[in-house]
Length: 68
Image 1: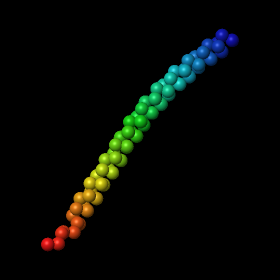
Image 2: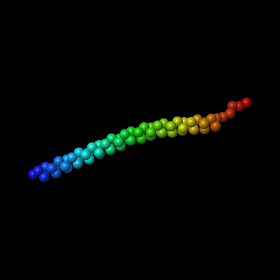
Image 3: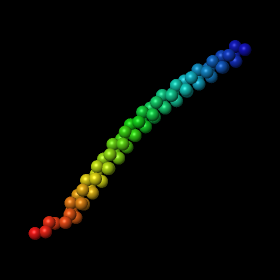
């Protein structure tokens, strides 16, 4: 009986350690996901700004010259 109890305690200890490692890894992954989402938001904003600048410069190139 003592042997079974000892085995159960060892397994429980092992599982607790594994669970703790998984939890730490999930936390790290979530942190990385948040950082990546922030970078994506910044990049989307910059793309939009560049598209607007490009459209503005194209519009200026094709403006009609005033008649003299």
